Image 1 (tube, rainbow, N blue to C red):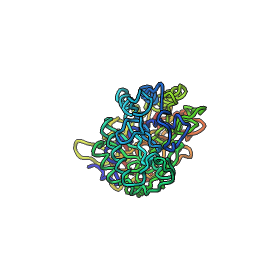
Image 2: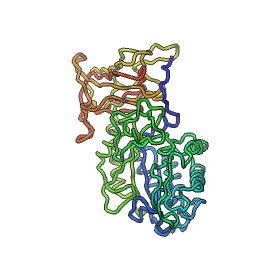
Image 3: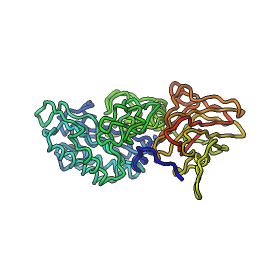
Image 4: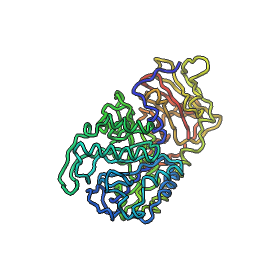
Length: 468
């Protein structure tokens, strides 16, 4: 009775990854102490000496911001390791931090467990410290470090393999440049298998091809954004938009900074406003992407007070604006087309507001359009329309529109000039069409609202509609 799936399809791990929506990025290491972004690989070990490193503070703040996890730079391009790896002396074990007994990865893993957050780790494939980078020996070294991270710190939701690979560096004092072909050097099929054997629910970002760079570092995705992609090893070619005809489910992740400086902390940097962070959420999560928001600790090892305050403000905005009253649950919901169903199941319009992600509204095969209408006895003040497809059956919708009415006869198109094309895992449309200037959309009082699916790759499968 269910609609046939339209490939490509997400894995269970990718579905769970979509559902996290937003998580923090923590860049921390020798670069923090040396005012660098890309360390050369020659920073002295004694320079790494945080005096108030507090991973629980990181976790509490991230939780308050409404984010679901943290990804830590366990090893950046400089090759320094934030855990006491057995593979190199260039690690936290040989620094003043806790007299060489510290393990930042382990401390963060414990903090994430305590506060109910998911843990992800960034392991740079590029290593500007090791003399043998660019040789087969380095690949063995890289895999050995990966095994340590996969087996010692519990389940990971994402491993971040940066796309920056090769160039100049310290390289054990030899200096010079190293050039590699990232599509072959790291043996990517083996890389995926290595991760999934230990962490089956983990998604590989960048090298590994299970989620893609959205194509900018500014906190926005394309208004038209497909999770399918055609380039497995160079997904940034279509980063902001994906490709409807792509062969791979490779959804977009948008990395962005909440500070005015770099990825690592720098003295004198400022903070973006909470309104700007809320706008990022609308233009990433609200456009079928995830948001990974960078929150760098300072030299003490703690998040600056201004960062903590700004993230709390962001969390409050998300709660008040997008998690308050859902007027869809108070409406009479109807559809002009509903899929026929066998005994024990249905594809009725009410499924879009029942809170059950396993149910959805669908039309009959061959009917690639349809309308769901919400009606109330009294006008409701609605700011945002949240739409979600049942992506387990593929991303389908190619065009839609939102209209409102106060008499059920005369209808007004809503959403301004926002391109109402793709939906995917989640789409958020401010009724007044604004995601800039006034990030908190003014409420529109309406008695009727309808969502029109105008075109779809196959019969639409709409899992959830919220009217906030």
